[in-house]
Amino acid sequence: MGTPLPGRRRVLIAGLATLGTAASSLLSSRGRAAETIALRQLAADKGLVYGTTISAAQITGDRPFIDLVLREAGVVVAENEMKWQVMNRGEPGDDDYGPADTVASFALENDIALRGHNLLWYYRTPDWFFDLSSRNEQERAVIERINKLSGRYRGMVHSWDVVNEPIEPKDGRQDGLRTAVFLEALGLEYLDLAYRVAREADPAARLVVNEYDVELDAPEHEARRTALLGLLQRMRRSGTPVDAVGIQAHLRATGGPPLSPEVLRRFLGEIAGLGLTIQITELDVTDETAPADNTARDGLVADAYRRFLDAALDEPAVKMVVTWGLSDRHSWIVRRETHESKWRSDDLPSRPLPFDADLQPKSACEAIAHAFSHAPVRAGG
Ligand code: XIL
Image (cartoon, rainbow, N blue to C red):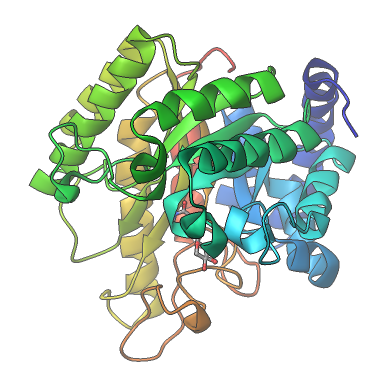
């Protein structure tokens, strides 16, 4: 493992043409003219990278789904396998890299870019971290976590979500930062520390701040945008190595705050103005309260994708779009056992992603394809 990125990227670009053709014949044989070209190809034509989450279990157990990923995705991200609490076996330093390696090797072997998700997330921190008795021990654990994981995949990762979800204005701090575990343990310096250690562990990886609920026209989203921009400004001023912002974009087909293209564009423009690139990192559309009828529901889901992407892709600093899954067959919105997902009260399976559970393209796929096809060309990054 460890082919340097530039070489990988050249191979990746060369591979795109062939994969695009394969997707073309497959999808057109279904008579769906709108999806004759794979999403990764439509994106690549505009200097964008499109991709999806994936899991080790899917790689070993769902070949048809993986074939779809190979056709459609130019980047993959492990849905859970690289999260600290998920990898950790219960003791400090005792992490299972097996499933994470499965995802990383899949990306490398297939010349697909790899996003790293994530190095630190308050919500998926092992229990023992909270019991460490000194600041020194906690600092050492954070440094070791970043060095070991990022160091293991050095040269293979396109971008790392170094700190996931650092913002929470509801916590009441003036700066809008989340007062969760790392800030409590290490103070504000944890952010600078995490990004510096990550830069050293893998200098080629773009370092990302990943955040949710910053997309829409609502006071809570506005407060989160203000806090995020404040954080990014401070990081830039103090020389903290940060390259990009991840906008999660978990959207709703119905029932949520509205999307204002002006508000979204202004926000993305402000991020770009700080010299940072932007990635849409977890795009999906919950159809929890949308009508039962599939066609009506799919139309509303597609509209949400279209409205969001049409506005977001106007900003040339947006270089990557990742959907949080590719097929309704594998989505955190559909899986009941996660307890934290939103599912429908009528018990119908949710349809939040571009392809349905039978791996057939839906209106959402057409909406994404349309948005990519009409996006301005941008420089890669
Ligand atoms: C989710 C996964 O999709 C679920 O399988 C898991 O149970 C919980 O985490 N924001 C993030 C992602 O940054 O890591 C989350 O992924 C979704 C919300």
